[in-house]
Image 1 (cartoon, rainbow, N blue to C red):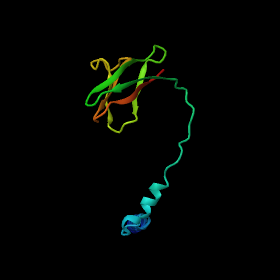
Image 2: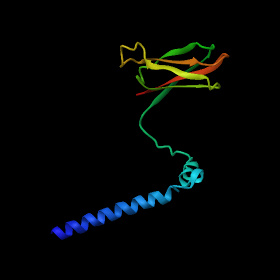
Image 3: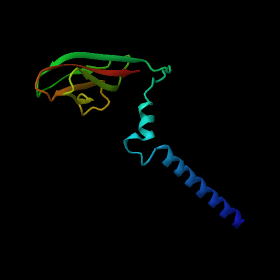
Image 4: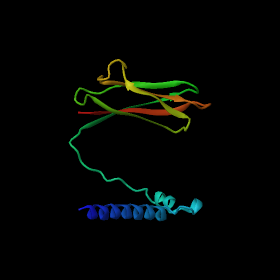
Length: 137
């Protein structure tokens, strides 16, 4: 009994060492900037598969212009048919526009159907934006 435990322990240790060695070799450790891990990560861009679900979604959106150094946005209310806000989103043609707020409105009511979605412009010129809300049943 005692001997078989030692054999199992030795086998587990040997397998763990082999796995570590394989990982060490696969990542190309010691090869500088040309490591295999970098090559694998570069090839890892692919398309995601879509699966159907019984969740019914509604997307709300609006556009606007935000001035330099200012905050701008909109309040969206999910319809009664899809009363649960899941996510807020935004997009802008400027890399100086960042998400400034995405929260229930009023913030004291976390179960609210209304959300505030806003952006802040960190740039020197005005920028167009689009903000939105995803609502589910």
